[in-house]
Image (cartoon, rainbow, N blue to C red; front, side):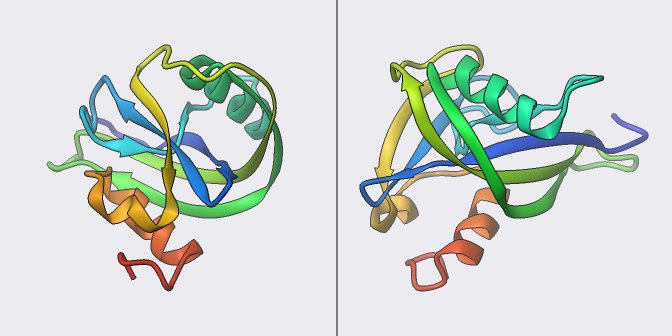
Length: 138
């Protein structure tokens, strides 16, 4: 249960027509796929949070670009079980080695035209519809 929204960030990383996704190992969304990301720590900038979260979850170092998508993930209940205000940023891989870490069970490059076959957290459907309106999820 929460009494206020928590700021979270994510990274939209596209390479060779594939989107980098992590399978969540912890709630909310255990077993579902999402962009790498997480909660912004006190005193941390949005860009620094993106860099840290991507490294922790995927082993990759990134350069952070513009905002790709913004939205909210609100859990059930009154007050809700959770409320994350999410800012997803475009990011580019600049180093590291791909591996699942932190709270990611798996990490994979998923072809954009195969995203509809993955069980994803609800906000990913909104992000994909926004960024790829011609996808199977549109």
